[in-house]
Image 1 (tube, rainbow, N blue to C red):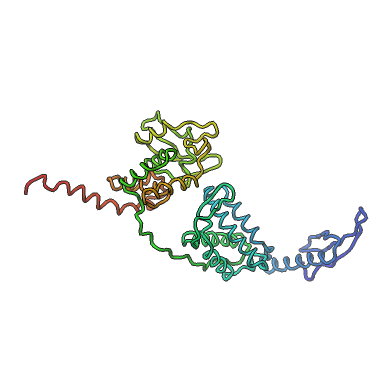
Image 2 (cartoon, rainbow, N blue to C red):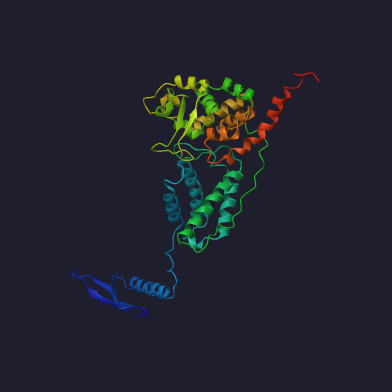
Length: 378
């Protein structure tokens, strides 16, 4: 028979001499005897919950999940990502998570659990972040975040925060911790279109390399000749270098503490300039990586950025480390290399990602056919 009323509490003495409350009841012919502890108020709450859960089950309803804090949700979400996304993505998500949790602790301390969070709360958080200086645009070894200027957060950073927040609360719904997501109607920001050229011209590349500091020139030029991502270059080891193969190449593959963005191994053939750069790199006793930072230590990603900015300032140009990759791809396309081959060299998961360079080909192909003009008299 189903349970029709809240089980009665009983009290008994344990062999230790202490007293405890317990409940003794039968559900569908099965006897259940539960020890509930020495406090009567807590025991009463427990038997009430047991009764309500059983009633919901009998009515075909799922028992209401226990309330969860935002911090607990964040921890569960990030733990679930381990092994499924890149370390760089997890690092970025940790920054977004800290922004979110810190906001609720500081500005909404009475909101204790995720079922209390509303879209209005999340809008407040995004608005507050929008007014803050750009803190998540750079990283260092200690705090992982430093400031570069005092301008408000850029749309790209805010949209990353929104994307993370949506994924976080979607996970809560999927796991049954929430009936619906308060982030579902958050809208992304429209940023200003980047009117700057997405790559450097060959003359600009020559200028940058010509003014680069001695310790960074090889690294910059290697990025130009290979199209590697920053993380791929930093984590390139001597075991990944194959100068005795035909053609000479390097392998981009996962390490114990790092994985490439696409999680796939790819081989990148090397031209002679890239080979020359590798052959003059000294091996460090401190690490197995091809490129070293100051004093032979592993290259720090922020130092690459800082060194490039110093050089760009000298020559009056703008850009970041990733622009070397854009420049590599753009120059290949402009020199007539097919999109399919460029896609393979870049290690894109889909050729659709490479098609953004396709518009560079027609103008330069037109220049090629124009060379025929005047070869034969009309």
